[in-house]
Length: 241
Image (cartoon, rainbow, N blue to C red):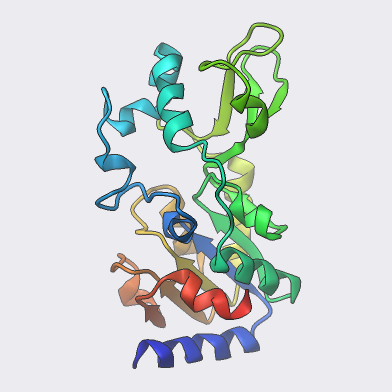
């Protein structure tokens, strides 16, 4: 099948379904200009005093918040980024009663910005931040106006509400994601290499009719999929944007 024929098959399945779950990763946001972690020009290949994997760990944040925030502000707290056709397409499919939930490994908040309501953020969001001492909430905008290491009015250090290495995923969000996937009749996986666990393991709970993978590179789930489309997600789902 050509890519166009595969897309037409996907569109037909979408037309027939009203219980779709989308599971996405960094590839969903690369078309908005946000770098992928593992691509050749992604975050893992950029030069810092420490490896990025170490910088965005819980122990590093506690030990060296200044260096953490230098990297975080430079590479993760991005300005002037906007949703792309994939985000808008999914939001519109939700509004039509097709997509029940978006489960994302991304922390950029672009799904909500595009209009999606039911978004499971497995790894948290840069749009939310909280004081480690008193729990007061701060937005991403608040952080931009603060010093390098932002502090609350109570004196506590503010931490982004993102899941760092060494930290566990939110169990409520994890269980909701399992519930959505296990009840879906169609699961669309997009823009993820499916190598980050436990998030990638959620796919195992799918028991529905159609498993679809949209990704530029091969994934470990391709052989189980009913349809594999090697194309940009925005190009495939842009039909609904």
